[in-house]
Image 1 (tube, rainbow, N blue to C red):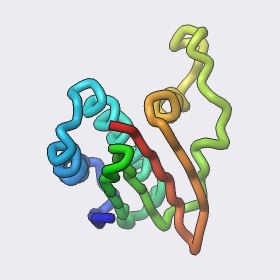
Image 2 (cartoon, helix red, strand yellow):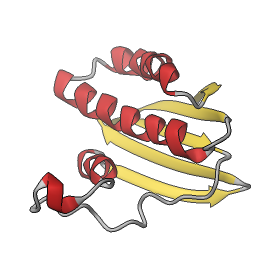
Image 3 (cartoon, one colour):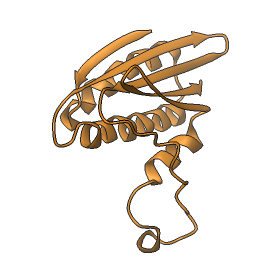
Length: 135
């Protein structure tokens, strides 16, 4: 697994996306799958940047691994912020209007419904969220 450590700051999103794109380029990833992954990576990284350490600062560790058989990409997001399992929250009710639905939850809902596997664990003082997408 390749590892990238960056400050958990929203202006580092481009660096994180470029890191993931290296493996997607190697795999010849289809555009529609690339878009799903870019949205998921943005959602997960920005949530770390905005909430994991607030009001303080810390790092995000991004791991990326390309599997050949079957062709898939695994991306791991790790931070030492306060424990938070985004998968434990009830899914957003997409049948409601935006006003009725309220704030929050739609991003992780999209991640859960576009990735093939999503897993969270709190381990050794770290939030670790892993996504996998078959390419």
